[in-house]
Amino acid sequence: MVMTDGWIAAPPRVRLLVCGAADRGDDGAALVAAATLLPALSEAHRALVDVRRCGQLDVDDLIGTPDGMAGLIIDAAIGVAPGTIVTVPFERLVAGDGAVGPRSSHALPVSQVLGLADALGHLPPGTFVGIGGRRFGFGQGLSRVVRAAMPAYRDAILAEIERLAG
Amino acid sequence: MTTGPMTTGPKAEPTTGPTTAAGEADATGERTFRVAGLTRVEGEGSLYLRVVDGRVEEAHLGIFEAPRYFERLVVGRTPDEVIDIVARICGICPIAYQMSAVHAFESLFGVAIDPSTRALRRLLYCGEWIESHALHVYLLHAPDFLGYPSAIELARDHRAVVEQGLALKKIGNRLVSILGGRPIHPVSVRVGGFSRAPRRAELEDFRADLEQAVGLAQATVAFVSTLSAPEFEREPRLVALRHPNDYPMNEGRIVSTDGLDLEIGAWEDAFREEHVPWSNALQARTHAGERYQLGPASRVTLAADQLHPLAREALASLGLGDLVRRNPFWSVAARAVELVHATAEALDIVDGYRPPAEPLVRWQARPGTAAWATEAPRGLLFHRYEVDARGRITGARIVPPTSQNQVAIEADLVDFAPSVLSMSHEAATIRLEQLIRSYDPCISCATHFLDLRIEGR
Image (tube, rainbow over all chains, first blue to last red):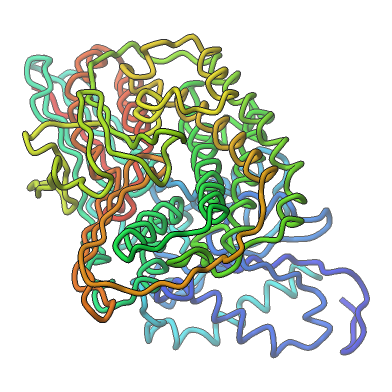
């Protein structure tokens, strides 16, 4: 990656898919991370990223990813300790590594959305970066443990942006 | 929130893990089935079946998530705030919640909306039906009929089928976005109309997509015609709205196949809710304690004459006759027919659209009881609100369709299960799951995990 501030060398290389709901406690963790990380990036770094807010991930969010662009999904997660940050390649999620039992709903879980995109031949290379949440109630803010982990979560997201773009 | 990739978590209780089998006969010849993780339904709960001498004696659809307190959350709020709050009850049918609430308030306050606003509300509802039905037919229910564990495996072998469903769903999402500002939890519905009505050109730009959607919906009916459903017939009591001029969505009267005919806000005159020990959700029955069924099959049965001509043609082409009413597995056909109806009606509305003179008419709150029902994708959704002299909510009752269908689901399982007990564990499980999915249960309001257990002795 050879870039300097103020100079855009190429189209974005990473589609950042920001999931979650801001009004449901730790479900808003990825939104908070993106809202505080992106303005702090250098112009060169920002130019690497095409940001999409997608709430609940839908297969269309992946199908539309241009060739040559990687995907980076950020979202709160359950099943890991609150505040824990996990970075998982798409292919591991599709393979079901470490997956919890079936949790399908009208909004398909991330692993199934990725699997569906893969089956349709539209899965870009990419990574899921999640943070364990503690509470997801309506009208709640971020829990203390997630707030405390937010700097590390931003660092993990930035590291993946750089790795995927590079 | 992502729930898929991690190991276990607090919401995984009381059971986690993929479907497991323990279906071999024991030394006494008794048989026990234990299956964890019913998939492709909205929400998570538990199902318990007790089989004695080949007969199902108990079938409990347990819902154990803590109550979400929406009926309490709206107390003290204004009607417009309520419309935004109740939309959050469900991510797949937020418009249904908005429509039941807004019509309840407008009925109490005596608000007369512009005819174009009425059409826009039907158009918005069409969008929700399209996205919900497309999702269910193709991604949730089709794998059952075609013998795949999920839409992913289905997509590997039948890519065109899944892409067809995704294309339809996308058009539904876009329609909701145009009218509601965003595809999930739209924000434009207000007492008295909409915060903003679309310009004619905005809808005209969408016309080509809707034309495509009609074709895709007709192709969906053709696809459904290739499926075969398990044999299972019963004589259900079906309940739906019925309107003299329109296919039921926002207006009409509550009617049933056994002669019920109620004002739209008078649901409580015929039905009641009750607690059951195995569920945190209320179950609804008639006052006589009897079960009833809501949803596409009910609407198609009770309002077939109000279907769009293209949808009537599609229904006839299936040649199912009475099976849509009598066999719950054929709800997939009713859903496909309603896809044709929703897409065709949406196209008609767009073609005839004139922006309302007043997208948002003035209104004055009045104290009293606001009650209304509309047709969510999976059935009748009843709301009642008590409003004080300041226009604030003092009490609320929300009865979603799945809480009303629960009793019918349990009864169907009791009646249907004996026919699968001789099957392999895997085959029996698929059939029972398929039956539950026939109701397109949307129990996210009250449920987080469905653990299916069948025990026999």
